[in-house]
Amino acid sequence: MGDPVSVFHEGERSLHKKLDIEERQHELGLRMVRDHMPDQHREFFAQIETVHIGAVDSKGHPWAITRTGVPGFMASPDNKTLAISSEPLSGEPADLNLAIGAKTSVVGIEFETQRRNRLNTTISATTNGTLSFHVDQSYGNCPKYIQIRNKTPNGPSTPQAPVTSATLTAADQKQIAQADTLLIASRAADLGDDPRDGVDINHRGGMPGFVTVLDDKTIQFPDYKGNSFYNTYGNILTDNRVGLQFVDFETGTLLNIKGTAELVEDLNDGVLPLMGRGLRITVQTATRSEGALPIRYSFGAFSDRNPEIAS
Picture 1 (cartoon, rainbow, N blue to C red):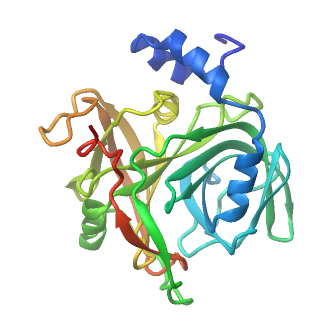
Picture 2: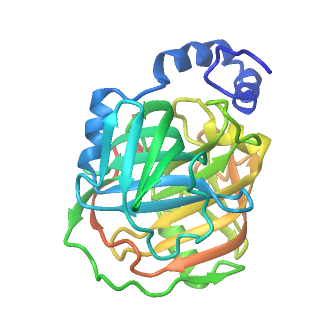
């Protein structure tokens, strides 16, 4: 079963070992990963208006979804619980497993300040539209690659009906090619009681063009240097199913991609060569939901921590 003390599961540890960072990451994980939320994280979730959730559908496929509300729609009655009161947005799969006992993950991002905090969770209660998430693992992330955005007046209250296709449409490809942010959900092979195993949702960011559209079924993006936890990569080594969400913050369009991921070790096209590796995604379905996100953001500035402009 591996090291019972480690906060990482077997897939994550195998990458750490391959990269000769196993001992360093073991010690870093013990320092950074908690089984509860510190007070500043509890306050953080209570003050933001959007949250991103990773969950699996009835067939076990992970999806990245977004929920919104006025500040206070998330609350933490204790340091082991985050309660979210919200309604699904257009395009969210109807068969997501959000029942008691379901493994899930939560990431909150405050684009104005580039703050980001993450939770790996298990749903502990569902009451009158409120989901209560039990904290299995909690940690903060650095502000790398988070673009600065400012909230603008909310958009139309009537989103268009979602459209699902088996390939990326021209509009999908354009949105992806212009994106500087995406969310990716992944899962471990085992979704049992071990707090190290479960669902993960993660933010990826870069300059526009950091995601490459190879064809109408395939996209790829590079790996940028971060905390080297390799939560997403470690999951993909055990189960290659993923869910991606691209958000157009100005129009509110959400693009959800269901697919599979392949780790590419020699991803170096001369433009974004940073770590030399990345992910190649094969699209199974793409669901486009125009105007689904009621909250809008205007672009503020590219992060000074982005790889092309970092010192």
